[in-house]
Image (tube, rainbow, N blue to C red; front, top):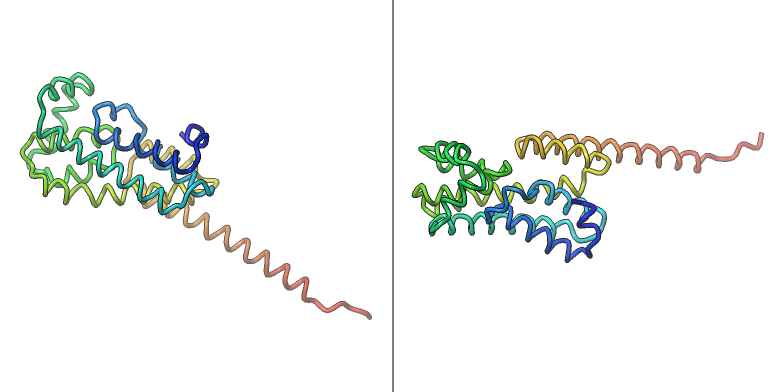
Length: 213
């Protein structure tokens, strides 16, 4: 994804990433799209100066939240949605998500943002289960904002650990965000400390008085 987005100017890369993220959480085709990878790649570009980090985080968060809202709306007006949903993702998977929503709708709406595929399914199935729009928004939106912002910052500041962070998040989802953030923070602190110690040694060597004896 970084190779794909790197070919665009910063604002265009943001627009493309936002479109992918909206589709990933708001359209049925989203079950095949790389949500987490897109956010990390956008953060990586921001970290390399293609666009401001805050703009990347805001764009990624807004796109995924709006996508979830669209998914909930579509679930409220299903039409032929049920048949297409089952065809795309499989009846067994749909039934598992519906079972998770039964009695735990709020928790499921929040946690779903952490994982691919269910991030696409849950808004639709939550609406179909009778969950109110206000409750869905209150449960899902804060996690969507955290997900978009957190992964953008990870991508921006992961540095040499980017590939490892992308693989880990892709495999395990947002629950590893805190662990990955700690790893990135330690790498950043170690690099800063090394640079600081190096500059102190240089200053000390430069400030030594010449020995004329």
